[in-house]
Length: 338
Image 1 (tube, helix red, strand yellow):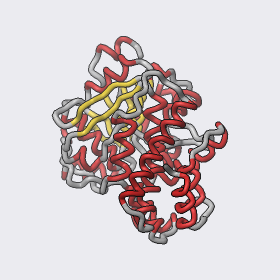
Image 2: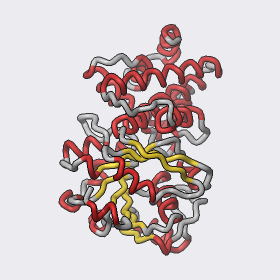
Image 3: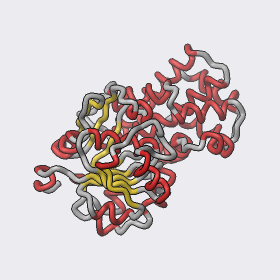
Image 4: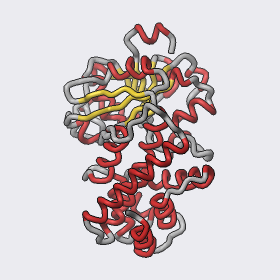
């Protein structure tokens, strides 16, 4: 990243207007940062200006409208920002940025708060920025950690991890988020943080499904242990990093909160599948995106390509995409977990 960005106060732009985007806007404005906020729905912009709250997500979160410059023009938001945070569901990422003039990203700092895969080649957002758009890793940051938007919005103590290949870059960005209710951690393990953020959603779907099938806490603890071991094995075999400590919050912590929290949409989605809902009906009733559903297919195909055994991912693929009996698949999985 250029030295002028390291030394100056960054102007932030944010793409997305869902729960996590709203929580991040609140954090940034609470710490004294003005935010250029891209919101596609102009009616929602008017609502936020009048009432100081997002009309559709986290309506209890009070927003400092005097710190917000909202626009339904994505190019305007990017043009007026030094650092751009992408915070949209991975399934809709490419559609959301389609109107964006990629030339405007030149010299911008790009921050991914999207947890999942965004192309037919099963690329993470950071990989997409680097491989497809040609953005150097010196200008890419990945945001991770055990952070449910609902708790962040309620100012409950949360830990955010900022990962970049260059520690001074993640350090610069993290300064803008640090507050009495957000603790920041810096990392250089950009692949580990991003892949674990995607994989834990798959495992949370599995936990929710098993709970609905009648499995108790004893088995679920074994399932989560197996998920952690599976995730670490994948990371170490495909993206080894000597600085990685998988027991830290961005890895194990994020896995635990996503598998056990009442706010976990992926656990909720899995629970509905276990009760007999179809994928379509579960998504419709939730009115939210369960990233774990899409990440299951991506991780299954990535592991197959790289020849890495992921039994839990395989089991969820069989249930969600091959429509095999959940009882049969989980009972087989139970026979190989330890």
